[in-house]
Image (cartoon, rainbow, N blue to C red; front, side, top):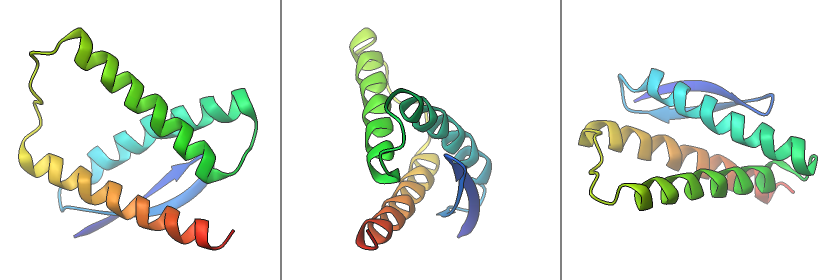
Length: 103
């Protein structure tokens, strides 16, 4: 398992991922960071967890709209890529839980 350090809203986070998935995790983190910064610009700093939640909801909404626009489309990602992203998301979720416990 590889570890990638990504920056979200100016803070570094170490994320575990499958070997070979490092660049994909960086790309996804950059996209997520853009959404977090957008939310922060609109509502101010309300805490990382709330910013992350709102950004996650924005991404979920975009995905939902994309699926509605093209319901016949199948995911193009091979299983290994999906597994790597799932591992990365699980690592981020674990990190967020630790942060939440410290609040």
